[in-house]
Structure formats: C-alpha cells, structure tokens
Image (cartoon, rainbow over all chains, first blue to last red; front, side, top):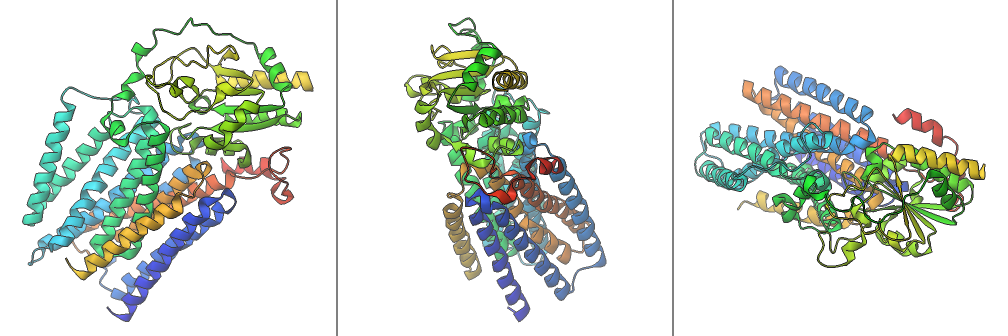
Length: 470
Length: 118
C-alpha cells in the first residue's frame, strides 16, 4: 500500500466517523441539524478524497471525467429539485426513490466490477464473486422493489395488494432460477449468467412489493432501506472501500431497527407482511356491519364547547389527517385552545402515517413544537387525566378490541384513548380501518362522532371555539 | 478466505453493532429524518461510481459509470437537502404556555420561516 492510498483509507475512516457522529446527534431534535451537517461534511470529505485519488492515479480518460461530472451534475440537479419541492405528505415516496437509486447504483458498481474481472485472463477470486453477486441481487431487488413501493405510495400503482393465482410458485421458480444462475456465475465467469441474475432479481423485487398493501408501507420502506444499506456495504466489499462498508452497515442497522419497530407496532411479523394476507382485509367485503351501529353524532358547536372548557386535550392524529392535508388546521385549533389556557398535546402512534415518524414531520411542518408530540408509551398514562381526546382520522390504533384476544388486531399496541373522560372522533363515515373490523371506541358511551372531512371539521371547530372564547 | 476479506467482514459486523447502538437511541419523533439521513449516507456509493469512471475505458463501462453517477449523486444531494429541510421544521416554540420551557432566541421567526421551506 503506497503512502497516498494509506492516507486516503484513513480519510475514508474519518468520513465514516462523521456519519456515526451525525447519526448519534440525531438522538435529540435540538442537535439533529448539527448531526446532518456532520454527516454532510463526512460525505464532502469522502468525495474530495476520491477525486484526489483518481487524479493521483492518473489513469482516468477524458471521457471518464466527462461521464462522471455530467452524471453527477444531472443526478445532483434532479435530487436537489426533488428535495426542494417535495410535499411533506409525499416524503415516503421520495425516500423510497432514494432507496431505489442507492440500491441501483450499488448494483451497477458490482456489475461493472464483474465485467472487469470476467474479461481478465485469470478467473475472479471466489470470495469477491460472492460479495459481487450479493451486491447485484440485493441492489437489483431494492431498485425495482422501491420503485414499485414509490408508485404505490404515489397512487400511480394501486395500493391494494396485487396477487395472482400461482404467484407463490412464480416466486419460487424465480428464486430457484436466480440461485442456479448465481451458482453458475460463481463456478465459471459468465456475463450472460450475471445478466440472468440481474433480470431475475429485478422481477423478484416487483413481485415482492406488489402483494403488499398500502398500510404496510412503513414496514416495506424500512425494509428496503435496510436492503439498500446492505447493498452499499457489499459494494464496499467489491471495491475494497471501508467507507462504503461502514456507511452501508450503519444504514442496514438503521433500516433493520425501524423495520422491527414498525412490524411490532402493527403486531405483525416481517415474514407475515412480505407474504401478505392480512393486507387483503381493506376490501369491500369488510364494510358490511357497523354502519348503523349505536353511535352518537355531535355538532361543531357542541364539540367546540367541550374543547373550550376542557383543562387537558390530547389530539390523536392518524393518516386520515395527512390524507386530508389538515395538519395546518389542527395546529391552528391547538393554538386557539392553548391561548385559552387549555393544555394540548399530540399522541402519535408509531404507524400514524406512511413511514416511520411521518406524522411528526407533518405536524412539525405545521409549526407544532416537538415537545408537544408524545410517543405512545409516554402519552398512554396521560389519557386517564384527559378531559377530551380528539381523534382525527385514526382508526385501528385506537380500537380497544386490540386488548382482547381473538380479533384481527389482538395484541397490537394501541393508544388508550378510551380512558379519556370524553372522546370526540372526527371521521368521514363509519367506514373501517385497514384491519376491516368495527372500532369499539365509536360505540363507547363517552364517544361522540363528528362526521366530516378532517379539514372542514377542524376549521369549523376552530371557529366554534373562537366564538366561545373570543 | 483472504485477509482483506476477513478485515472487511470484521469492519462490517462491528459497524452493524455501532449502528444498532447509536440508532436505537433516536426518538420516534425523528424517525422520518433518520431514515432520510440514512438515505443520504448510503449515497456514499457515489465513491464507487466515481471509481468506475476512473478505471473504465469501454463504452459499456462508461454507460454504467454514467448511470451510477446519476443515481448516486441524486441520492447524496437530495438526501442531505431534504433531511436538512425537515430538521429545520422541528423547533421548540417558546410561546407554548404549558409545554416547553422558554427559549426566546428562536421564537419570532417561526411563521416567517414556514414560507421559505415550501
């Protein structure tokens, strides 16, 4: 190892340390921005080092420089535009697209490396070929799977689970085919074999995500995030670069933890989500009973009185709030209540949204200060001391049926909304949540239903409260 | 198994543990920015894309290098910008009567900053 490449490896480790430090600083909203700056600095250091290495080695052609710089400019421009213009509600799609391009780039690195060694006179060493193959497979699955996930989130592809007869068989055949091709590629260097692996992996990615329902997206995005990280780490093995290995492992760990958290919050195993099944529940079949059940409706004025004269209010936002783009309206209502001396906080279920922590970002965008955003375990003991729990567009995560065995959501951790002194539920209709079962909260005698679109309902509530206290 | 591969494996496994340790301390409030930050970090694959461009001299190599450079740089730039944009929105508002303890410095511009981020 020459002095120069020794130094550059050390600098790569420094960059990787910046990534670790950056992630560490994210343990608190107050220091998180600094964390992102550290991480950015690490990335700048790594890229600058690579440029220096390339210039020092001097084997790059003029075309090489052009390809690299033009590609980086185009990609950077697209990334910048997307990051600047994306709506916070569309964040899951964007994250999914970043997973796709990250995984795709990692796969391309391995494909190129394979082409290079396969064309050499001596066959590739087995150990590198294994990581190369893993990189190609994981990267390609992530690429196509993430694009499908983004399409589902964006509504371009139906968010309902898509299956067809014999899907399981096709998957098995595909996996067997891919494995056989991988084995062949390991034994004898073969470009054709590699392309078969690539195509099989791409198709597998599509087939993996298509059967997964929209409400399972928090798990899928987290899982694909873990895949991308692993693919990047494998790319690090392939090109022998520690920065890629460390960064990829960090992302793999992060995605893995989030996947586990999300799956736990839905009380489902990861395997169960991937195989599908439960997700098929949000179909027409589920909307039979319950529509005329024994519920009490309430008007904006009555709901306004309850809120205005409450001492403590907990708002329980669900995806319905985000879908109605009503996060600014809810923040306004909370402001009015607070200025009247009411103690307001928000109870956020881990899967309230389309990706981990999504609801927190939406409320932060609406200027809700983060100390008011409370996690499930912290807020649950507070419900018993709460005068009014205002549930907006959240369903299954408030259903007390989860505490009993024998229901579709049994064992799922829920918000103890039913322990509040009174409950107001804003909902468009008596329709079912994702689990397709009746919400027993709605027939609770303490509960009043306010049937309206979240945005309209919240504006009406705000003006009702204003006339009372104004 | 070569020494290089063994070293790489050790680094990989230890980094995984560091990742688990560090990331399990991130509060749920920040999970979306965390995932976005992780996203930008895996943009490090740009280094791999650059090295392809530096070593290749075949047309297929250039095509792969170009695609990889586009993908990876979109990942890096987009990831960091959007993470920064999100984190900027998380703030303690001192005017909140019951909740946060006062911190007057960041108080006033709260509304003004909202417009700039969209």
